[in-house]
Length: 197
Ligand SMILES: Cc1cc2nc3c(=O)[nH]c(=O)nc-3n(C[C@H](O)[C@H](O)[C@H](O)COP(=O)(O)O)c2cc1C
Image (cartoon, rainbow, N blue to C red):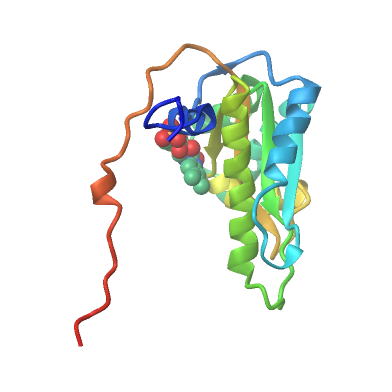
């Protein structure tokens, strides 16, 4: 145990205090900070050194076109989609100082199962969320119908079986938030013991 007490060193405390932040304002991380965040993403574990991680940055003016892409995809899925939902899709990217689309470039028929390749990209997303938090910014992992939509996937460079694991909304938290609630550890952890013979 080190001098920081039972919760360990400050990196562990940082992990314990991460929380998702959906209400974001400018600024986004600087270029230097963004490079660090992306490099932390590239430290995700990866079976077979396939490096399936792909990150697509959506920022600045491109966010407007991305919003229109979400609207067009939603309309193509359902011609009767409510106007209010379309408007949400249209403006949401503009409310995020930066979006990082995280996906997996899947190698089909590889000995490393596709699911593991996908999980590695998900681990990269998690690594980046932690880095975003450690650097003092806010982030949130978002999926939903648009991220499962082949039109959106293709527009971002993910052609099946490659696919998105989600979008990371990144920026500065609009307001300070209390520390996150911690799940009851006992409800999630068990000790395995071999069955009696
Ligand atoms: C794969 C994945 C997809 C998610 N998609 C959404 C989403 O589309 N919309 C949403 O509100 N929260 C979504 N969440 C949940 C938030 O990212 C966040 O984890 C949740 O609000 C809990 O907050 P916390 O991370 O502070 O515990 C998703 C989480 C994961 C892991």
